[in-house]
Image (cartoon, rainbow, N blue to C red):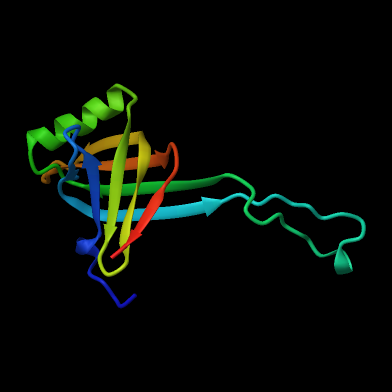
Length: 136
């Protein structure tokens, strides 16, 4: 993948009508994939080196972002998803790479403001099911 502009990585939330809405005003975004290992090392492992079981363990994805809301509608949508504890479909669009999509739950939604600045938010999501990847 060639170098990309950070502003082109988009985070989108399912709108409930079959489409997705870009989460407004994200200035920073982060997507993280993790997989736990299953250690199957035993007394006869070659050279006492650790052995892992392929394809086992729990996989998870985390998304975080920070920015400003562009309008009341996007703010309302995020608050409803958080306060209802909903698991909704989200997409992370990475140009020239692909789209990562799946169910996520908002685990943190922080608001902050400086005296002479705009109100900003921080968002953290954790995967709640199978994550799919579609190359572009």
